[in-house]
Amino acid sequence: MSPDAIARRCRNGRLVPRYRGVYAVGRPDLTVWGQRRAVVLACGPGAVLSHRSAAGAWGLRPDGGAAWQVAVPTAGRRRPAGPIRTYRHALTAEEITTLEHVPITTVARTLLDLASQVPIHHLRRAVERAVDLGLFHLPDVAAALERHRGRPGSPALASLMTDLRIHGMTHTRSDLEAAFLQLCLDHELPRPIINRGAAGGEIDATWRGHDLIVEIDSWAHHRSPRAFTVDRVKDRAALRAGRRTARFTGDEIERSPANVAAELRALLALATSKVVVI
Image (cartoon, rainbow, N blue to C red):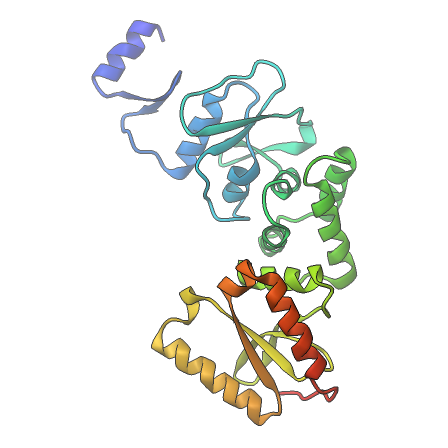
């Protein structure tokens, strides 16, 4: 179209400007996938959705952040107006695909990029989610790590892959549970068993050979009267079975990990060596 034809369609509402050279057709509001496509188009040829934005599109992490994140070729970089952050990357063909007609980094490359921006427990959750969705392919991740040795994020992702190879997949149900597991690893505490099934429900964390149970309480999931009652019923059931329950809040785990680790170390030292199954 000529500039005049575009301007005429903008005046009559058939085209709605989104970014320079990018227009919505017929209506100003876009679905999230329409927004993703518009953002990538605004960044020019060869641009692909990446980092946190790619993780959100794949369903590995919640969508969020103040700006869209897009990887662009090292040459010919375009700087669109709007909340968009671009990264110069020489992506290989094996690291680019399409999802819902939007160019995007592959899951393996997305995990590598994500590793440079999020805490390792968030990365663990993203890997767990990729496995649950059937998107995780270990050889692809290994190949990405091999291609990008020394790249920011690669040590964290490589460390996590080693942990998964040795200990298997730990299925946490929240960022807080993943943060608690990482807290134990960082402070060289015994590795807990996460979400172990027990009579009356699941236990957030326990240890082989110890009578200690740890429950992780977040305000979002434990503020209702029913949750308050259920928690205490579980604690009494554990006590009858000869097990002690320690409750830690999400705020403690996130803000005072060293204090939590010190308290856990003391509690585990007091624990009996008798294994009690409940």
